Amino acid sequence: MSDITLSFQCEDYLRQWFIHINGGSSPVRLKKNTPESNCLQFALRSKSENISSPEIDGIPLVVFIPCFRFKNPKDYNSITETGRKMFLSILRMRFDEQIWYDLHSIYNFGIPKEDLIYTWMESHGIDPTEKNFNAVAKRLQRLRSRTLSKVRVRNFRKNSKKRD
Image 1 (cartoon, rainbow, N blue to C red):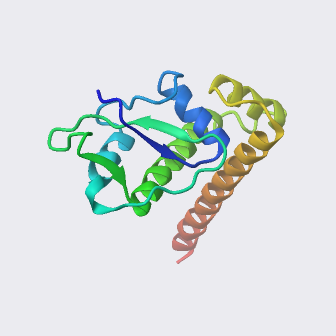
Image 2 (cartoon, rainbow, N blue to C red):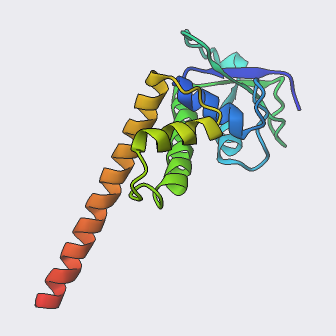
Image 3 (cartoon, rainbow, N blue to C red):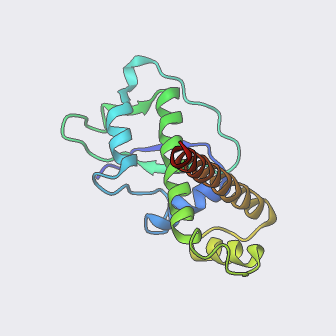
């Protein structure tokens, strides 16, 4: 493992969740063959390509650059803006997958949604602040509405074929 790091600007809840699922320490050491590690392997560039580092406000997500077979972190230690967007996009998709997998089956059991989300946040290393709660609740709400609309469309098409 190298000691060279990359910093990413992302939402607090996403940063806290990612640090928690990767062992709880920052900078994060990525596991081999994870989507994030594979993304970095694909997106890393050499520093000689004059890639500017973006200004980061607040606390960044700091990740150690893993050693790849053909990309030594001493030479390949920079990432383009599109590479940063791709990395954060993968984080958001994995977060959505995790929250959906954990909560979709118990969401409609009469448990207060606020308690359910705060409990989930605590168990995944996210500080139980109002800002984090609102962000996580909104992501879950969007996932539910997207999934429910797909189910309604599927059922409508299925029923309309039966009538024909």
